[in-house]
Length: 285
Image (cartoon, rainbow, N blue to C red):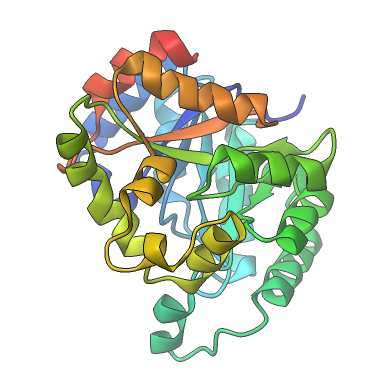
């Protein structure tokens, strides 16, 4: 049996993760009851503490890292954590890995260079440590890394992308490999309110060259990428509106070739967006 993430899951950042284990257990059990098949854990640590919490509280939900940073988390330690956590929860732990960003790596003393080669070498180390190809995914934006994800893992997990990127990625992957893009959403119908929540999140990523270069490949120019981002850019990266409008964007990804969409709900506040998960579930799962 292979890992099955279904057609929709949720993406949750580390800063949003509750400190109270009982809240984690309650929230993830409800996610499973709502019909979501996977939870993607941003800023994942190599000890796999948060995935382990999810798996212990649920029976079917897949816990996926989105992603373990190949520069800061040694492959042997991550593999050891995988072998510690995974066997008790067969086909429910998906190890997402990625190259991260130079501004977060180089202050720690490592030189961020040849990220593609670093990811490939990390996959070699996971091979040597016995982490199955089908139990890992690769954060992938550019064509070479998307192809690598399809060849060396279950598939690709692109972040901060549009349905156009999804179509491009599917064209590179071909049939078979998993394609699981992340999609940010705001459940608000007023443009000013929705963009007030969405824009600061988008603006953060405009300081990271990996994302900016990918957005340029998707057709966005200086007017879109300067400052905090244009309305055109914000609206392309963050689906906002009522449930039907948001669900339509998710369908665009599926129509473009996505197998699974990781839905990141933005609210502008701390805490898990459980009310929004409930509202979206009937339209997504």
